[in-house]
Length: 427
Ligand code: S3P
Image 1 (cartoon, helix red, strand yellow):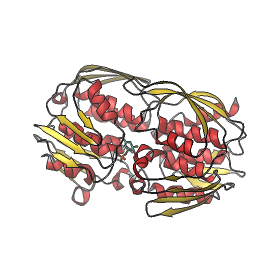
Image 2 (cartoon, protein in one colour; image 1 turned 135 degrees about the vertical axis):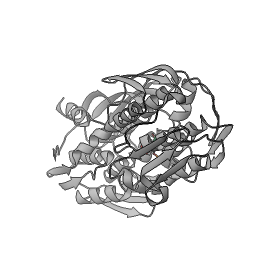
Image 3 (cartoon, helix red, strand yellow; image 1 turned 90 degrees about the vertical axis):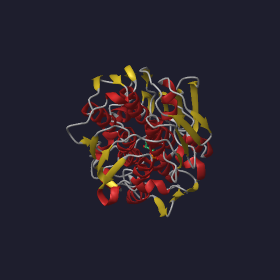
Image 4 (cartoon, protein in one colour; image 1 turned 45 degrees about the horizontal axis):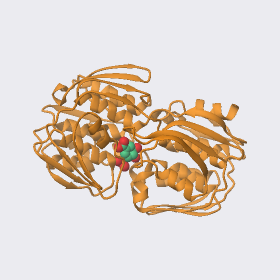
């Protein structure tokens, strides 16, 4: 598709759609809890719809009307062997968290996904789940999809995670909830804690001491109501757009502000971006508030270490921000980008280079030299939603025509992205 270029300003107010991580988990916890769970502001992105479809195939009754979803949970025991293959589409969160649930179910399941899922490492979850007692196999010795799972009676364990991944942590917490005894998980850096918060919201117990978590198996969980806050990872595209376009002022309503997800706000502050937060309701089970962003003079920075998991999904759009900053920005310790929906070090560097950015890949991140003026050209999302949206925002500051290939990938996490963007442009 042809993207809008040469934009002058973005003005107005939008509510970004519901958080992807929380939407997935609301279905999963609703399915394994006892009783009815209702969810509002559910994200209607392709990934979360894949989660609903998998749980329906596992025998869970789920009603969905727009962004309102109701799940009739019957505990872990309510899940039934599926006659069909479980297809997770493009969703790493669906497959990895589902594996933790299926690991303890006494039946057979087979899981597949799209081409990108077929390249994503599964050993990071299948190995620890096997230690707990599950029988999981797959292509190349269990590394890749298609995967088969034969659930078993699991036993608790202590596990030090080699990579900082909320998907791995969450998968093991789901397994731990079904295991005999205690499951103790130690993460190398703090990652998003939505699963921990949700265990408590559904009436369960969990001990958290910094990067160490302990959960007891066999606890009952009870259905509840979940209101999903707006996704800060979707808001990030407009935060950057507002900052780099002169004369802009955008209000983003009800954005999730969970501290394990707000690394981008620390980086915006560091880079000199002018934004404010109104009405941060920290006491909510997931904090959220409104954000106002204004065009800013931006300077380069260094992003590294424990900050990386707090903004891992925002690195593509931060890279674009850095092209419009004075000075150099260095992103380090971000090897995990190589195993996302695409190798995001390569796709960010290659696609932004095509538009004229001065950016180079390193072994664990990238270096961006600002400030560069972007020209135009033919770019591709490579089937990666966040690369597609980053390029659509990049086009706004491009002088010449920009064509985006594979733009349909954007519906994975933000199906109304272009409607929201055009609303802010046309006001
Ligand atoms: C997610 C965790 C992160 C993130 C992904 C969603 C989650 O992945 O990149 O978009 O919902 O737990 P990793 O666990 O692979 O870091």
